[in-house]
Length: 154
Picture 1: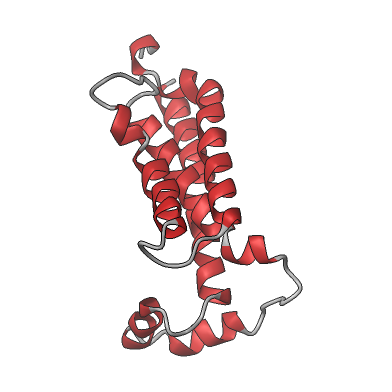
Picture 2 (picture 1 turned 180 degrees about the vertical axis):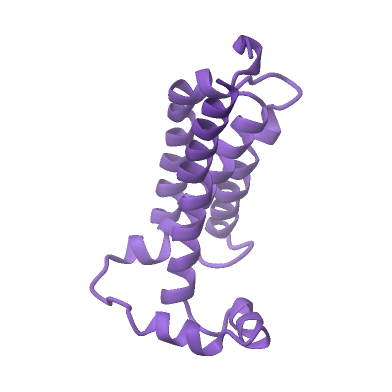
């Protein structure tokens, strides 16, 4: 019984935390400018050629919001859901800000850009990060039984 629950938890974690981060990372690797610091890391690690091959598969016809805003929203979703998992989907005074940290950073960063404090504001970044946070909280209803150790009899 424990093995089955662990497998189920692992699948959900991989599907809703790891896979979205991977997909968001691939958006950065394939579509973002090579002037980003990560490309010098790839070069240092000897990954310049495989990365260049990945970048050859780009489809420039993809919508702007998908190429430039979705990765941030994916990060907010994954981080928020991971925090909810860590805190067993219980929200209280002790963990409230930890659980909202992804949204605070993602949405707060975009609001800082709106006021010219950093970077360039993008309304799609803001909208998609808000949606991502809400989607993570919607998932709590679906996953609460899996991750709530207090109801486990195992």
